[in-house]
Image 1 (tube, rainbow, N blue to C red):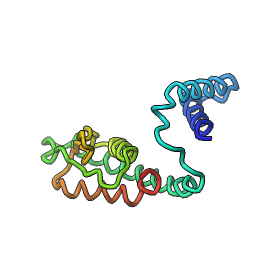
Image 2 (cartoon, rainbow, N blue to C red):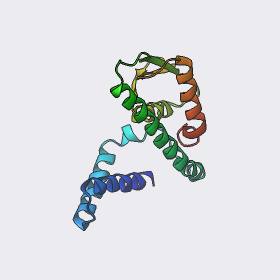
Image 3 (cartoon, one colour):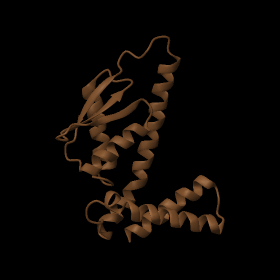
Image 4 (cartoon, helix red, strand yellow):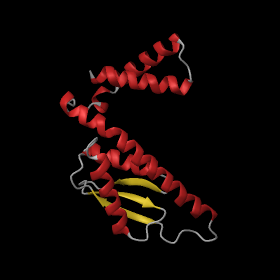
Length: 163
């Protein structure tokens, strides 16, 4: 089931990239998606599949996650725009370590990816014991506030979808 869903999702992305609905492009997208999934199956599908009863609440919460991330992207864009047009470079650019907490390994990856999608911060890496993950923030006058914001975003929007 998850291979079929992932294949369809990859084919849709392929078709959106081509801006095409030609039947040959649809077939090529399905074949490419299926080929990639079969080739990288062990890497992409680590762990047991999500049961349907667990998937439905995740799917319900997914639009809230997308909207929250879109708002974060807008805020980050404003921050970067201010930094670019300012006379002086940002004074509070720094590295911030964010505790992993209750995040699963996949949850850490998703948190890092969502954080990097928003302009003004970028994922740096995790420590070997995975007790924290690090970002570089363009505007972080208070490291603790950045940590709290990341944790609040996780608890409120990401955790119901990707713990």
